[in-house]
Image (tube, rainbow, N blue to C red; front, side, top):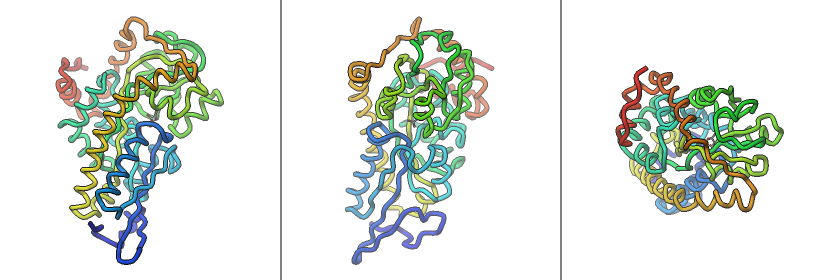
Length: 337
Ligand code: MLT
């Protein structure tokens, strides 16, 4: 299998070529926002192994976890400009560049791993992937599934929205997530993912939300004591390739890359199902975190946060896009504006 252009244009020259004898080996760089040990790394490692195997060792993918290659949002820009080959990052950090994927970050749309699989692996996922090429210049090759985002904080148990009063909560730089917290009565602090641990450690912010697997991988238990077992957004973390880079590959290599993405996605889903519960237990038993059940089955959180949906109908491409997603999940259409 050969790369189509041995001398890549400057715009797609992030991959490094190494000549050894007659063989052409190539190394691709993959940025990973989370630390090693989480679902992002698991997806990246699986993808890298598959690519190495499928190309008979011709392509090696080097992983750079923990935001070493920049904030998650920077990596989208860099991949789209051809300065980076691959990135794995949270969907909420793609939404500012590709607003229609916001349908997947609207609160309480995706409520389970099954819902996440239905939306990402069906027609809706395909359409959003196409939109992301158009809007953000990157192609979604695969998905990691990290589970529901749980609210953590260092101050007190939080069971209902009123308990948030007086706390500073970090959110991604994502308008939908900012609005969700505003619906619960607080103004959150939008902060890049790469700055979050330090901000929690230094007490600049009191809390944040992310899945159990991410809380564990990022060692947030060192600086956070309480976890509310909420599920307002399901964390999807796609693997993307710069579209310029993808288009520079031979058709055969493009198929290989897409196939590896599909297989790594299937692995990621199984990984979540197999590991989340044990990680949740570990956070309590080994790291002393306290888990709090949301009051009244989370109903007040749900009622307030779903009230923001109409504010985002335009940015996600119209209310009908949300209705299509809800229909795919067997649910009723969204309320009118
Ligand atoms: C964020 O909170 O910015 C991201 O969801 C974190 C992540 O990429 O895991």
